Amino acid sequence: MSEETVNPDAEKVKKLLELKQKLEERMEATKNQLKELQLLLELLDTALMEKSFKKAEIPEKAEKEEITPPPTMEYETSIPLKTVTGELLANLYLGEGVMHIIIPPKRNFNINTPPFKVFLIERVLAKMQEKDREAVRTGKLPPEKIISYNIIRDGDTIRELVIQNVSPERVRELKSSIRWTLEKMYEKLNPP
Image 1 (cartoon, rainbow, N blue to C red):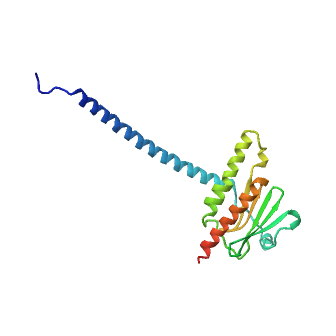
Image 2 (cartoon, rainbow, N blue to C red; image 1 turned 135 degrees about the horizontal axis):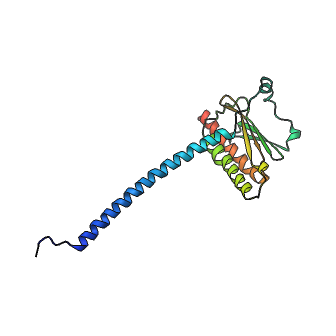
Image 3 (cartoon, helix red, strand yellow; image 1 turned 45 degrees about the vertical axis):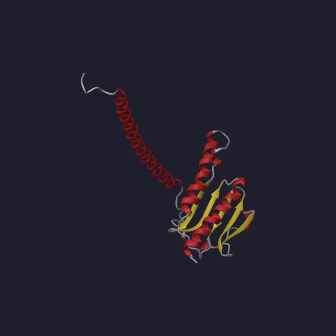
């Protein structure tokens, strides 16, 4: 008899180890693919966000008039949005299906200051648009009722935010999200 007898259990263990290594390699490759797909999705989301709203062209005369609040007869409600210490962040005007937020001239809220884009635009407004688009696909909402928004800026400084097709159910969420966002931006500009 030869001393080189092959142990069948050792052969099975070797094959199992090879299989385990292959699975680990495939898992790592899949993780890398998932990371690439997530990056592509983020890039697409950013591109869609940039294309979904444009910077408003404000004529010279309109710039001087924007300090004046809109006529109250067009809006049912006017709500001052303030910090916990009472500092005015913005005036919110509510009308039928419209929410108009006007930032006071002394507030220089930059569009790039967190959490404006990441929270208010991406997590609140864009998510509401997604839900509305899905409701349109399922026939529960007409396409012209999809929530939309326009950011009126002076350079990178936010001057106004106009949100169209605001349903009554969303007023409270939008109001609190906008106030929270502006308060966080105010805190970044005015640290204690």
